[in-house]
Length: 358
Image 1 (spheres, rainbow, N blue to C red):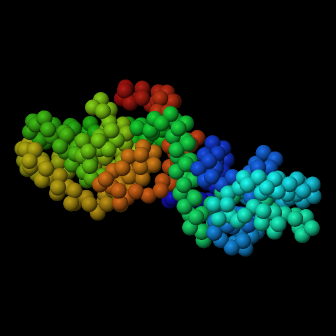
Image 2 (image 1 turned 90 degrees about the horizontal axis):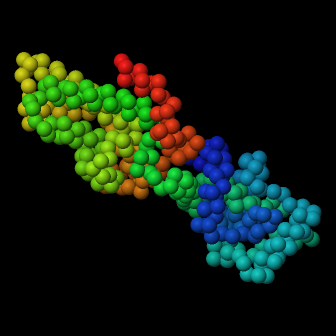
Image 3 (image 1 turned 90 degrees about the vertical axis):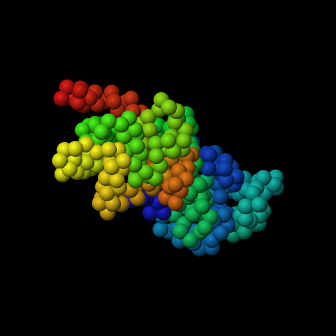
């Protein structure tokens, strides 16, 4: 199930602990705040103004998420620290270094209303991380909703840069890719063996029936898929597929191989022409539609969304399935769980030896 930032403290913590991503968010949003003691600081009024909500909304969030905000830098200033902070705000106000174009109020007015010691002995101040934390929790603000989407995109961009922009085979970083690829290789053999055994010799039968499977699952043939991902002739289509898609391809190949065998035996062991096999595939597709429909829907959604986010590739025929990638996916392909395929192969050498010797 897709998680979102508003209901998962683990995901909020994961993103807010990514220093590179937070730095990039800060740079893109251009909301400087007041620099004090090594961090940018914001008042409650500024935060409420930024998210275009009543200040009481921010206060309610503080009451219900006090510990989380403190962990992300929210601090109650008193005494000498309040005095030093007030001076920093006053200096910023007098210098004009503040974001008056961001609907956060005039800085001098903030100093007058919030930071005069004669009227307040303490004040809660947000760091930039705490300000983002508000946006991750706030469900009544359109700006907060937009911010959450932007944060996820920025996190993906930052992590992609860490990979050197090499995203064509990012699918292989997932833990499940290798087992799925091994299974798919085995079922592919069963599929091609069936085409050899039950269809008359025709050099086009492998590519055409493979395209039938691809079209059924994600509405593109191999040529179209190559064009979307900009693959060269030496790069394998299946080497770029996500594990869920590979598993569904394997299921199709295994299912159609068995279906073809049964029809061959019913026919009296007479091989089919390729044109007849196309009709048989249509029959197989109609017969299995109710079985595969939920898996097709899932595969299309994952392909469309992940390729748009991770590879900047749009599958035109799947654009209606594009949505924001889940935090699970970010972690799966770009986070600590992800690893180079070479590392996984090295770890599974004994498995490959058993496969070779069986």
